[in-house]
Length: 171
Image 1 (cartoon, helix red, strand yellow):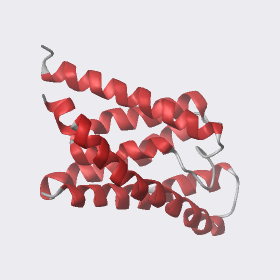
Image 2: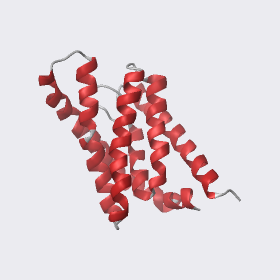
Image 3: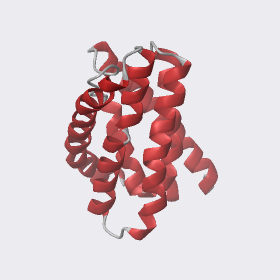
């Protein structure tokens, strides 16, 4: 039987791989980068609502995908990875205070959507646009992230009924 640390590491490695694959699929359809993003992989952010240990897999999934496939290279590694770590770090910190799963899922949705301001700033900065473009850029990124995460909630809940996310890293 695997010990807990090994199991957590193995499960997070699977999350990293799944994040990269789902982002790649989104990229095929032109939805993984730019001012409107519908990365299927963003649904994995909700894993942190089930167990905080998933923060490693999701964050490293973002970093790896951006390192391998982002047209912005290291800049996207820093900004995308940083945005994910910041947004999910807030969830990680507040999760013990939230007793209901729906509260944690709502927090993931709000936190990750609002921190898209970081990605908006990245796009404006790398595109050599004026700061007057920051809020319009955020106005496209926020709803695209919000829609993806809201749609993902019932999907993740349905998958959890079969997979039991919290037990995967804690057993």
